[in-house]
Every structure is written in C-alpha cells, then in structure tokens.
Image: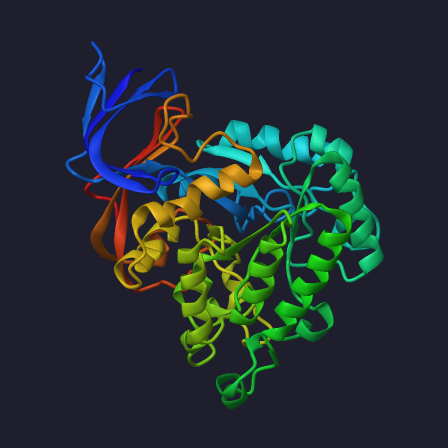
Length: 427
C-alpha cells in the first residue's frame, strides 16, 4: 500500500530540522518528501502532529529464553510498537545467554514470528557471560549479531578483555562495555554521598565508572577496536570520553532515559522501582548528562528495558533486583528533556534513532528517500497520568507509575505497515 502523510511536523534527526511537510511511502520505503499525493495512495492527515523515524532502542532485555514470565518476545514486541520503538536491539543476558550461533538463531526465528517490530540481537562477549573465555565472535557475527557485550557483568580480567577486543578488531565487530570498576561497585545500590549515608545504603563513588571507563579506553587505544559505552552517567566520566573522541578513538557512549530524567532523591524511602545499575546519580550529574546529550558528547539514549516481576522488586532495597521496564515510557520520558530541559526534538531523535542506527550499521533512523518506512507519529504535548497496570509489558516495574507525563504515540509503522494505532479508549 502507498501512504501519503501530510500536514505533519517532520522531525529529521539527520539534518537536525523540524518543519511542516508531507512524506510518501511506497513498497515499505520512504519514496519522497514534500511530493504530491500519488494516485490511489492512502492519505493520512497528521493534523500538525510530529512524524519522525521510529526509535531504535539499543539495549532491551527479554526474558525469552529462561524467564518468559517476566517478558516474552511477543509482549515486548507489542509494548515496543505501542511505545514507538520500531527496532529493538536485544541484550544477550538471557538464560542461556546468547553466546552461540544456535541460541542466536533460535531467538531470531522466534522474534520474527512473534513480534511486529524489527529485532536485532547482541551476543555475549564471553561464554556464559562469565568473563573467562571468549565467545565464538566470528560465528556469531556471521549469524547476525550486531554487537558483543556481557551486559552489566564487567569482564574484570583485563587479559581476557584485551584478547576479545583484539579479535573483534580484526572482524570489525562492535564491543559494548559497561564502564564500572567491578570491585568497587560490588554490592552497592546507591551513589555515595549524603543521601546514601542518611539512608544507610551501600554506596559506590561515581569514580568507579570513571575508573572502569579509563581502563576500557586504554584497551581501545591498544587494540583499535570499535567501542560503545552502554551507560555514561557521571560528570566525572565526561572529560575522559571527550578526550577519547578527540584523540580519534572509535568510541561512542549511551545513557538510559532514567538517568537523564531521575536523580538519587527519587529513591525516597527505599522505593525499589528506582533501583538501577549503575545507581541514580545526584542532580548535578543528571544535568551534566543532559548537557552532554545536547553537545553530542553522549550519542545514544535508550530505555535499558529490564523487566522484573513483583517478587524481585518487593524486597528490601539492597536485595531488590535492579532495573525498570521502559519500552512504553521511553518517549514520554524523553519529552521531559524537551519540555523541561529545552532540547529540540531533532536533537533528541538523533540520540533515540539516527545515532544508534548508524552505530549498528542499520538503514533506519532517517527521513530520506530509500530509507525503510519505520515511522512514528506522536503528539509531544498530550498530557496523561501513567498507570503501570496499563502497560503491555508483562512486568510492571516502572519508576513513572502515577507520574504526570506528556507525549503520546499515535501510530507506529514498520516497513510502511501500521503495527500500532492509538484508539481513543487507550489508557
């Protein structure tokens, strides 16, 4: 079907522009911008709402295989479509881990049959994510892995990590690291400071992130590997990141939407839905991260979607599982950066869509002729109160429960096909 979107606010992250215009979709691809309506096309009046590339969410955890009761490929796919995420990049922290071509192909086949959005998988950097033996990087790359990471399990053995990086460099593979000093951060559940001391919480200094990042940058300089830091959350890490980029290292960095919009005080009286890895930082760090996104120093914003059931969260703060779901809250939370912090929509979409697509070598994330018609129609100003029980994710562990938010997804298109269209009755 040919589609003609008109009266739309076109958000183009590649050119950094926002303007009113039209967009034509034919055969699953964007065929023209500001062209007349083709004969027989379905006309879609966007009513002045925003039309942007679909979100490429770089770092989604799925419970399948191993923990389908927390999140299945089907439930995550439906949540992604409702949240405007047209491509999910799955993390390998499943059970078993995605560390062999067989597991990767199993997950890919099931995803293609069960999810309405695009799915690409990362693979484990070491066998079982145990940090002792390199995974089959070459075979996994041939099987379709887009990057290699052990997730939040830091490879503490520097020799093992250097061998992995050297091998990945020869294949042109992307390594995704979790910058933390494993020894310092072990057992910590809060950022060190007055708040953590008053609450009696085991804490870790933000310097643990800086120290882990410095180690990784030394190895990147030694091996020449392509490297992406999954989360940079502390202002103390930014000078090292800027220096690495200035020195020509092939390095990018990301951050979760939670670390951009929440701070350590949101933990309040031990609210476990606000427990993350790394822990939430102080407000000065949060503001520094927002500025780093604005300056382009931090390249990618993601949900870091991490589903946990009630039993994993309804525990004392130190014992509760870390992480939150984010596929459906990523867009309205990102609108806080627009309405409260003043970031323009094209810049936000550069970090949500264009940059992650570019880093992973995907063709999406653009509003240009010939690009896939993975599109998102949304109202950035629509207000609502979030009810976590209305989320499509199986797990409901969101820190935004009961929060007043702005930003509604009106429709999501993958390859020109509508995979979600909001009805008036939608919560």
